[in-house]
Length: 365
Ligand SMILES: Cc1cc2nc3c(=O)[nH]c(=O)nc-3n(C[C@H](O)[C@H](O)[C@H](O)COP(=O)(O)OP(=O)(O)OC[C@H]3O[C@@H](n4cnc5c(N)ncnc54)[C@H](O)[C@@H]3O)c2cc1C
Image (cartoon, rainbow, N blue to C red; front, side, top):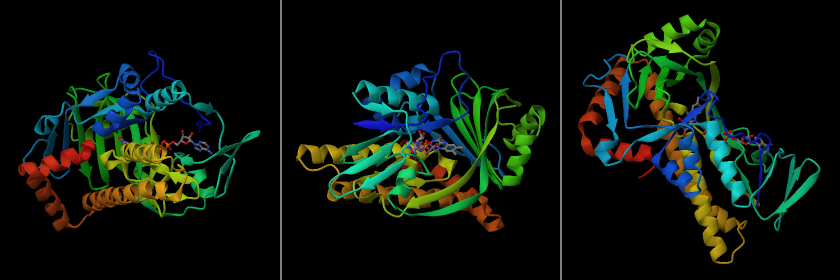
């Protein structure tokens, strides 16, 4: 078994600053990372579990009756998820793969020939022959293109601005998200006491937020977060990501299967992207295990089809739900604004619906 990774992540040193890219990992993702032995290294680096999540509309007060508060205790779980550095997740999973005997080539895929009996994978200076290629090479997936799998893409008129900030008030292990008319602003708790900002906003505002000086940026984020954590002060570089959504029309081709962002891309407003990818991996491993046990070919279309059908349906539902949330919260009509505030207040009061949503966010339903 082999992994191609042109940019293998280096395990971060204790002295390295917290990486700018972090992800909220669900309990299901945690379980998978524990199973492969990667979790302890991610935690040792200083991941931050969060016990509560607070969601509110900019037209209402944080903590008021229309604020949605998810609490892990309501569903008998120790936390709702963990904020971890992307680099730490990538480095620890790669190390576990190597320890399990997987060969890692620091090379990019350069070509792919797919035949009914074998796939030929071209990398610099050599060709690898395999029964199955798993495309986990991100939204731009060269593998998806080589395999001729098409996708439906939609650009959001938004960019996500990210940075880390120190806070005047303690974050207390709470992930916070305030929905502004231009998009959601999330403050995710970090293990070192700071918060990680993911602010989805208009491309023009993103440009202004990247161009202004630290003091102006800090003041702008403090104001946009309604001072929920007091004064915020930026303490990292800043970056912005254009946002879009897509779904591969089909997750499989001859001896190729898509997982993660190579198969689907969603708005980051609910922190589900990488978690969906981990659920893809879990399902694919189960199907391949079943095929191996039955002495079947793991690249066989029937085996891949079972995985592809199950995950494509699940991911399409999640993608549509997140897109619906995006539209609901950016709609400017007064009646929609009032409906969504009422909806947040109602969900907060109806325990079974809230419990269902929490389980769903944890990846446990
Ligand atoms: C601002 C922002 C915040 C987010 N927050 C969250 C969050 O809180 N929770 C969450 O679940 N998700 C979040 N996401 C989504 C998450 O980052 C992605 O879903 C996740 O990174 C996808 O992982 P992946 O491994 O599928 O793809 P990628 O992370 O894109 O990795 C692709 C890999 O393929 C390799 N590769 C590329 N080309 C080649 C080639 N030719 N040959 C070989 N290898 C190649 C790359 O080197 C890379 O290692 C967020 C996204 C954004 C933009």
